[in-house]
Length: 188
Image 1 (cartoon, one colour):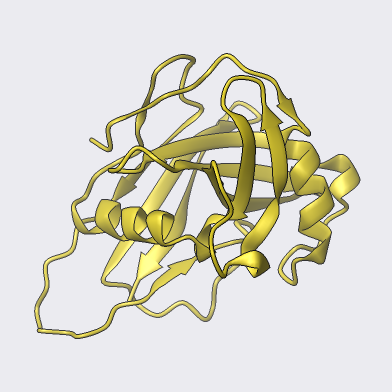
Image 2 (tube, rainbow, N blue to C red):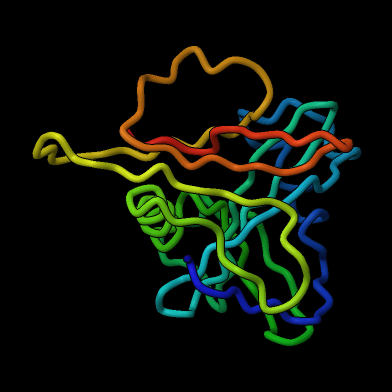
């Protein structure tokens, strides 16, 4: 188990969706219209050091479903301005720097750990989970020196350039009354 994520009863200004609506149009993989952005589901991991909030949001725009992993920090992440989504005022925790988590070493390490250990999403201190995720686990058959995690951003359509992975992170949520399962990340 990935632990329990602390969820505060708080207001965010701007909201997460408002931040994403400003940031997503500048991303090369986003083809939607941020004006119709809606949250579909989300899950959390827990930073082992308890410093960084880690949340992955599944959002829809223009009929396409996207995965957007985010990290929340109490100060700017040195040298990672390219991954900054924006800042928000959290009514309990104060100013938060919100990052595209693919550029945050805490998220990357936790994603790889969850896949390696066949772990799953964190429990929530309040509220209900809107989706589940599970890592496949990895049994190393060689002494490989490098592995690369690949995040699947656009969850609709074929992924023809995906090689057979060593391990995967798979997510399941309910959308329009139907259960949907997708590969969210791979390790090769």
